[in-house]
Each structure stands twice: as C-alpha cells, then as structure tokens.
Image (cartoon, rainbow, N blue to C red; front, side, top):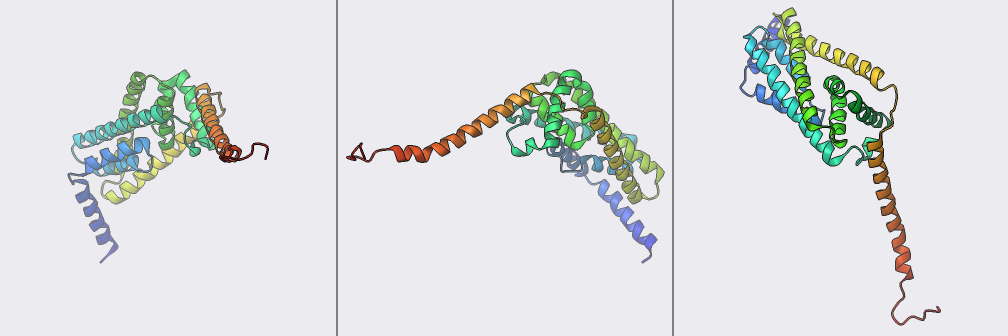
Length: 248
C-alpha cells in the first residue's frame, strides 16, 4: 500500500468521523468542562472540525461556532459560581506565586476594566479560569459578567472556527494536514496572546484587599487549629485524677 493510499484512507476516516451525530454534543461537553477545568482541548477540537467542515454548507460552520460558544458560556458560569462559593484562597495551589499573581491581577483589573479582561482572558485556558473564579470570589456583578462573557464566548467561537476554516481552505484536498496546520496556528496564536496579556497586565502585583482578607482569614483559621492541637496535650496533662493530692 502506497503512502498516498494510506493518506487517502486517513482522510476518508476523518471525514466519516466528522459527520457522526455525536460530534457536536462532544464539542459542547468539552467546552463546558474546559470553562472551569482547562484540561480538555475544546478550542483545538473546534479548530480541527472547522478545517474539515469549511467546504460544506456554511451553516455547519456557524452551528459549530455557536455550539462551542454556548458550552464555553455555561462552563464560565460554573467557574464563576465555584469562585463565589469557594473563593480563591482555600487550597494550597492557589498560593503558588504565578497563580497568586494572576488572581491579584484579575481582582484589580475587574474593578478597572472588567469587559476588556473578560474578553482577553477567554483566549487563554488558565487565564480565563482564574478570571472567572476571581469574578465570583470578589462578587463581581453577575449580570455584567454574563453580558461581557456572552459576547466574548461568541467572538471566541467564531475566532476558533475562522482559524480552522483558513487552514481548511488552504489545504482543501488534504483534511488531515489541514487539521494539523490549523491546530498549530491556534496554539501559536494562543501563546502569543498569553505573552501579550502577561506583559500588559501582569507587570505588577496590585494590592488585592478582598483576596488578602480571604488569605488572612485562612491563615488565622489554620493558626487556631494548630493552637488547639498544641494545647490538647497540656490540657490533658493538667487534668487531676480523681482522689489525687493537689499538692503533688
């Protein structure tokens, strides 16, 4: 079997898999989970599928963008709710220097330019989760958050589809290569956006009164627990046995 035949078989398989009924539900589910637990490649899936669908009816590509945006919006709302319930200082990993800096930046920037931050963070997996968590933890207006996030998710969905469509048009006769190129472009653009945002917004560590209050409360709670643990043996030792002489 020649290399050309193998490539043709793979392309046929990709085309066949992309038409399955479960493709859009999987995209939706991945986008939801990626909104609060960024381990699933939701954007890569949208980009790859757009590279395959670009030669079909335009409504297929539009539906892909809207389904991805809807899933992302729900995932962001879940992250907001988690942040509101849990906060950003309950777990040890939240005190890692880079993560702490992101949380502090998000709290400060949400007060100053919430719309811009929500828009830009949507293109960075970890960044958007930090922003969504912090928005909930700092009681950022849910109405404003939902409004800006809805616009951001729609733009993100069509942005992802546009990357895949561009590569799909370029490599129209080789869908497998179109997928590889489109995902590579998405990764590079994501890295560039990440660097730009960190340079523009993370050059300083602003004072975060809300997050500092949460951190102080956690430290005090842990100190009290340690104090009680340390005091327990003394308290036990100071107890007198029944009938014992107090002078002994």
